Figure 1 (cartoon, rainbow, N blue to C red):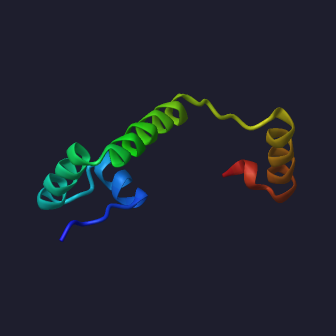
Figure 2: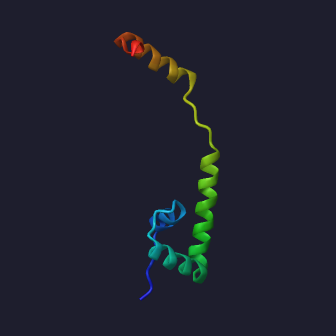
Figure 3: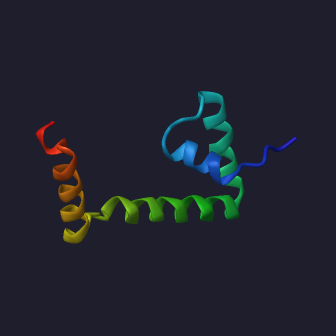
Length: 77
């Protein structure tokens, strides 16, 4: 019986969270399933793009947080 792999399994493989046995089965499945390979490549690409994002809060949000901290005395922590 062939195991079906899910998007969660793809993530577990990419982030090296599979056991050695699962890893071997997954690699075999990648070699024999073009759709799974395409999903894998797309997920790698997406993760690569997300890793390049630089996220920063807006100045408005930072000022609001600082005002709130000042009003509650948290700025002294």
